[in-house]
Length: 253
Length: 253
DNA sequence: GCAAAAGTGTTCGAACTACACCCATGA
DNA sequence: TCATGGGTGTAGTTCGAACACTTTTGC
Image 1 (cartoon, rainbow over the protein chains, first blue to last red):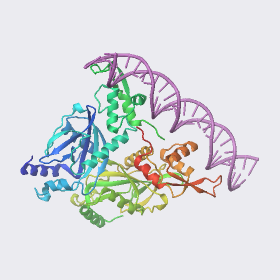
Image 2: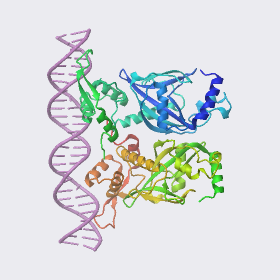
Image 3: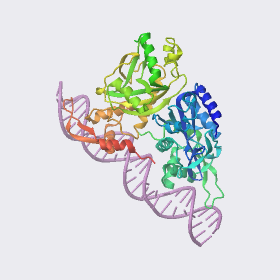
Image 4: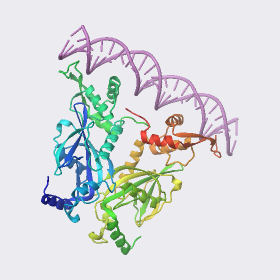
C-alpha cells in the first residue's frame, strides 16, 4: 500500500510522462493442468480484482506500451498480443476514480480523469510467467476461468469480450503456440481447445482436423510415465504456423 | 477555408469540450452501380484526401461520438458501425500537426498533440447519404474503391485495415442489410459480395449458400424493365438477420 | 431467332460426423 | 486381467466446387 506521499509523487510523475485519457488493459490467458487461467491482481485492502493494465508514454506506440506493461507483470518479453476492443464509456473508470479522488486535489490527480481503455488479450506459456503485483495490488496471480473473483470497474466486461474474441478467432487462426510448452501431446492440445470453447470435442476428429492444418510436427518420442498408453509428442511447425496466422485457416468465400 | 481567427476559436473551443489525445476515424462504405464506394473528404487547397473523423466530447461514450460524427457527414442517424482497430503510432498525426502547427502557439493548438485514433467502419445505403464537408475540407464525396485518391496521414492504412476486417467478417456475419436498398435481386447482392471480395463468385453456388443462411425473404415480384429475364426481388428477414449477426453464420468448432 | 441474363438442377469429391476396434500401461 | 487412455480406421452424410440446361426478355 502506498502512502499519501508516494501517491502524490506517482501522480505528479504520471501526468508528466503518460498520455492523458488513454489506458491499456490486458487479458492474459494461460493454460495449466487442463485449466484455462487469467492473470489478475487483487486490490489493496479490498476484495476486488482487476486486470493488468497501465498507461501509454507520451511518445510510445501503443503496442510497445502493452508489451512494456506485461513485461513488468509477467517477466516475459515478447508476448503474443492482440488488440480486441476499446472500452470508452465515460463512466467506466468511475469507481476507480472514487477510490482515489479524495486523496489529492483534482489537478494533481492523474486518476481523476476519464480513461479510454484499449483492450489487449495475450496468450502466454503459464510456466514462463512470474506474476508481479503493481503499486495498487497486494497480489498478482492466476485465476481459474471456472472460479473468477469479483471484478473491479468494467473489467468483467473486458475479460468476457476478450474470451469471446478468442473463441471467434479459433475458427480462422491457429492457437496454441503461445499457450503450450515446446512439446505436448495431442490430448493436451485438445484439452486447450476444449477449455477455451468450454465443450467436449471428439478425439479422432480433432486430431484429423488439427493435423490437416499442417502446423504440427509429430516427434519420435512419446510421453512416458503416464498411467496408460504413451501418447506421441508434437511440436508446432513454426513456419507453417506463422503462415496460417497470416492467411487464416479457412478461406470461407 | 477558415481564417486564422476562426481557427483560433475552433481550437480554443476544442480543448474545452473534447477529450485530449483521442480521435475517431470512420471508413464509410457504400455501394452504388455495382461499385464499392468509400466516403472521403478533400483537404482545402491540397490534393490530399482523408476519412470522416472527429473527436470525443468529454462526457460522451465513444460509440455516440462516432454516431454523431457520421450524422454530420452523412445526414444518417442510426448507422451500422463496427469498431475495428486503434491506431496509436506516436507519429501518425505528424503531418496533420505540421499543417497547422505554426498558425498558433502550442498551448492553444488542439491539433498539436498526439492522437490515438479509434477506427470504425460503417455500412450505409448509398442513397440515404448526403455527403457534407467539414471545416477543413472543400469537398466530401464518394470515392470508388478502384480509383482511390492520395490519402492524408495514415488514412490509407486505416482504410485498408477496415476493408480487411470487412472481408474477414464476411465469413461469419451476414452483410448487406445496411448496404442494400429494401428490395434487391440476387445478382445485385452477389455483386456486393464480389465487390467487397474483389473476385467473381459462381451464381448458383452463391444463391444456394446465401439462401441457406435463411436471412432472405423471396418476394413475389420480379424486377421488370431489365433487358433480360426478370429476376426475383428479395428482402432481408430482419429477425433472422439480427440473430445471424449475434450467433455468427458458421459454428466452426 | 438470337444474345444475354436469370432460374434451376446434378455430379463429384472433400470434409465433417459419428462411430468401433486395437494397443499400451499401471494397478 | 482389466480399466483407462491413446492410436488408428471406416461408413454415412453434408457441403462446396464445377458445370449444363432451360426460361425469359429486348432487339
